[in-house]
Length: 450
RNA sequence: GCCCCUAUCGUCUAUCGGCUAGGACACCAGAUUCUCAAUCUGGGAAGCCGGGUUCGAUUCCCGGUGGGGGCGCCA
Image 1: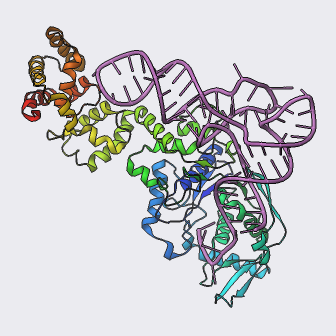
Image 2 (image 1 turned 90 degrees about the horizontal axis):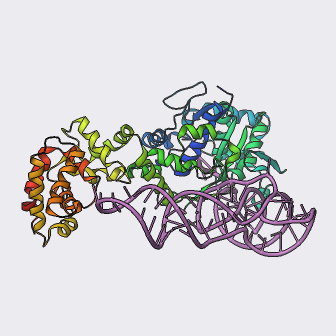
């Protein structure tokens, strides 16, 4: 294991932002690429902020994306605890140290009331040596110049973000701070804090922000800003991870689809873009489609099953049958949430039929029922219930009737599935099985007559 | 207002100063098919503007403009 230590330090807001998820991903990738350590720390500055459910949202999101942390909550480590709400003594100690060194002082705010602790901030420009942006020299701006010192402990005794962030990074021996560019302007404050505490600052890498399609910072209220939206909508975590990987980072080649392993091997900080990137839902959707087709069948079943269970389609269904059903529909649904719609006819005989498909196929065309009767005869006599046999057994009567196979295929599809669209008909018939198919063919006239 | 980052097709991006500017998504047109998809082929589509540096700038420098972010007893 190398000496690299990175961290993801989200605040439990009950919500994992895609931008945060990508920050976590980049940290994870850098840790894995360098053989370093990925630390998770929860920035719940005080107990009132610590909501168990909100913390769980973060864990679920990270795990869903496959970003397992090496140190942190539920994992432990030598630098714990990993909840800021449990590190008050550590902050108090460092604040005390700053006061003793005369780098900070108590201040009574007459206007707002109460006593705070303020940090003596330099008025000199500070240069941030950033691994992505280069050397960024920042002088205090107008507002800061008026009162360079900033609050590090609020009047209620709770230390603020700048302080706890720096203290924790020191205590947790973080070597590389990889975070959103929105923190770049505040970094000089952090560097000043490191200096005052007599610690060499870590390396900084500020990554570009994710913008919404309109071009401003993706905010909580934007559609698709929360990771759980993708989880609930039935995206494959692989697809979301792949998409996020390419938002602001490039493998410097033409490949679009990368496995996590390939990404880990190629990932490095210099290939990170310097400009912000818009979130392109269309491209994510395309990528999702790619994974929906290419996922290994076992993985596809693993991801699809929860959605079937939620739709109440799984009770009493043999494991093997479920797998066969999922295997033939793979590639049709674009989202796992759509899987129940595509598979209900395999699990229930009272599946809903698409009225449009029924009308188009049978309304005013009673001859199609007659064709199904012919097909029923052929299939009833079929010895081997496999898709090649089913295929051949359909083409035979079609030929003798002098019609195109399609003229039999379409009515048959609607009769057995209630839909005009679906996977290869013969594979469907094969999986549905002899009894079900014959029963549906026999019952078609009654069920679909106009 | 001040400070910081940034700038290639609509979007994500490639280009170690030599470009007929490449790829992907989306879009359009064909091909293919048992439906829907998928797939295949082809097409349109970009270097923000102005100065430098250079034999030569999309690439380097400066300025402007555009976009984003920051300046809390939020994180």
